[in-house]
Image (tube, rainbow, N blue to C red; front, side, top):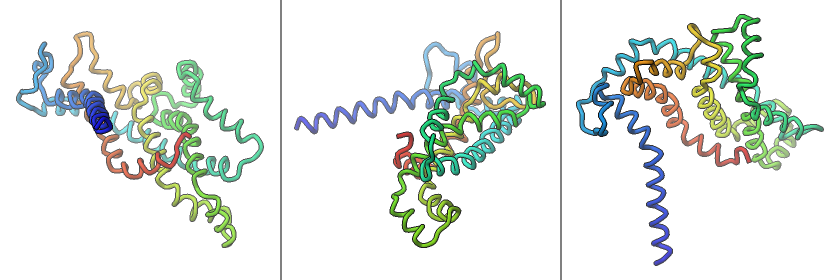
Length: 271
């Protein structure tokens, strides 16, 4: 009886925590269908006449180029990260050499460097190679930013592959390329999907480099959202519509890849 009561209490707490985390997102989506006057009421209202006016204003305000820049920076950087992380993680997990632990420590230590400490040399370097206010500068930065965490994650996935499988492949005459492409990659595919999705979320949400290195031609969606903070105040309904559109691609990709994501993360990422 006590065990059942404890289970019920845990269920109620879990539901309460879930609602607490989801409610701000629900309120943002709800506000995006309001007029600005309805969004500014002192008493929050759930009953109102829904409208798509705020979404129309967001698109009329020039969301398209920002969205295109975010897609380019996110997709291309993720492809580069996966292409570089897979062979690196394979070498560091399946065929470790002297200094492997030092290399891994160096990778993860780069994530501890405050980005604000590196913005000046990065700004000067981007200016010297004519990549200032260019989305390809963000592609390079996001690739370097996400590569260390991707190598660590992919290394964990490769280590989950039983050694017997690799020994059997070698006995059957599989070479290095065959072992990697025909044996290992199919087995760690969920891990690659999970790694790519996490890198995509990091790249899509990145704001600091985007706001400091771009101005007209290369800004991304997070920079677009800041434009709704004006000296006249916040446009809550329009900002909510823009934020809803900004999170929609990540939610859709996460929903489509949820099975691969759960399988990948359960393989022991970051352990």
